[in-house]
Length: 294
Image (cartoon, rainbow, N blue to C red; front, top):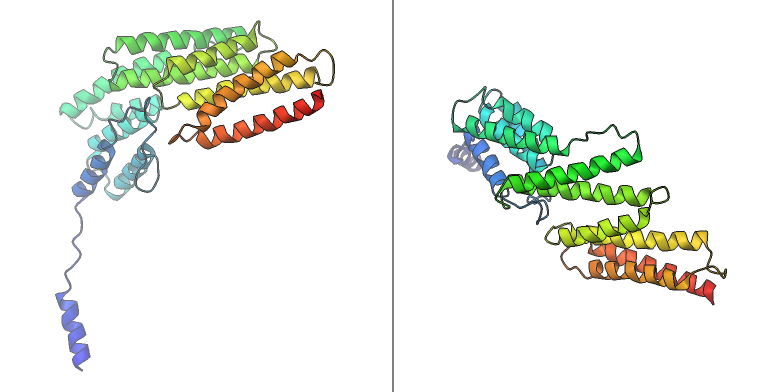
């Protein structure tokens, strides 16, 4: 009897769970996003939340959940933050689409800011878009060169090198420069000086993007180019034949090793383990070739 009364009285004293108003949920969501919104995504890796997710992808998911749970509420804020997440993820089309919905829902300063972002993103989008149909290799490479030049000019045109727009232009230029290096290397047998141009491009990227968080990836790419050239050499001119150029082979192996060693010692970088694995693979390959030369 006493236990039953105690249980009832205990339940009566239990505080009811207060339902969190929608605006508090949105405030928390937006606050979490803006904690990382100023991250320089050229110099720094994409930030992660407490669960290890890409912050900007997670923001899009949380915004969608908020919309579903609170239909018709705070649409201007939701669309504005969504646009900011998309632009940091490199999807300028969806960012423009999201920002474009803000002025129709708000006459505040948020609408003015959205219009400013649309103008900047359209310039970025235009600079990144291919303007050649890609029917020929020469046309494709020329188009890549043109896009790189446009983005470089646009980055300078934005003025402040630390601004969001300049950072986005710099990051896109780096991406297209990578595509250009890969295009040269993958087509090295049909391009004049294809291999040497690819090596020059990859080496130049390490210098031009020394402050980038992807510089170790560029080193890996250059090392892999040299490694692949050394492999091709042993396939086309086997080491057990007199025509095999040992000095050239060693030059390529040493050039690849130089890059892999640097990456394998890059503490705190995600590429470190890959650099170590590539170095091990290179050494195993070199030992195999030395055995055939003896």
